[in-house]
Image (cartoon, rainbow, N blue to C red; front, side):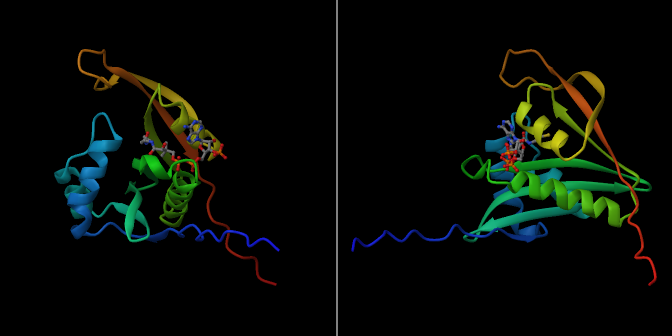
Length: 169
Ligand SMILES: CC(C)(COP(=O)(O)OP(=O)(O)OC[C@H]1O[C@@H](n2cnc3c(N)ncnc32)[C@H](O)[C@@H]1OP(=O)(O)O)[C@@H](O)C(=O)NCCC(=O)NCCS
């Protein structure tokens, strides 16, 4: 009987918070992922401000990261990023759903985010998670390429139903 080849199981993502020691690495990833990337200082400020941060590692390497800002009654997703070689494997969805759960736990009644109008993949991700388009900000984003025009942002919102306490039996 022929021996079937054995492939290693895909590494499971290990989720944790962003740590100060990650900042340089994540800022380098960010420069590869976004046309208008956050700087290392932006990530440091997010940590200092106490924003919710999440990263996941596969095989000891950060492959997804994001930042959520919590304010009284509402939350805003500020950054959602997956390294190019790990996309379409559910990591972006997992991160967004974790942020939604974080927002609910903090009693936020709604969650907002902004996204480039050209970013069809991200818009599909957010709409699948229940976000709806509520506004458009003209010329909000710097151009994708030098010399191109600035780009509009879609503002998206998710209404968050409060967590129901378990009914006594
Ligand atoms: C947008 C991004 C976060 C998606 O992450 P991802 O891990 O690839 O997304 P997932 O695999 O979790 O996809 C979840 C769903 O989102 C939608 N989606 C994601 N990427 C898509 C794409 N390129 N085209 C169309 N739909 C897409 C699909 O509905 C997908 O479900 P499916 O795979 O079952 O069809 C990722 O492409 C990324 O980091 N892009 C660069 C940074 C960025 O644009 N961040 C968002 C800024 S607001």
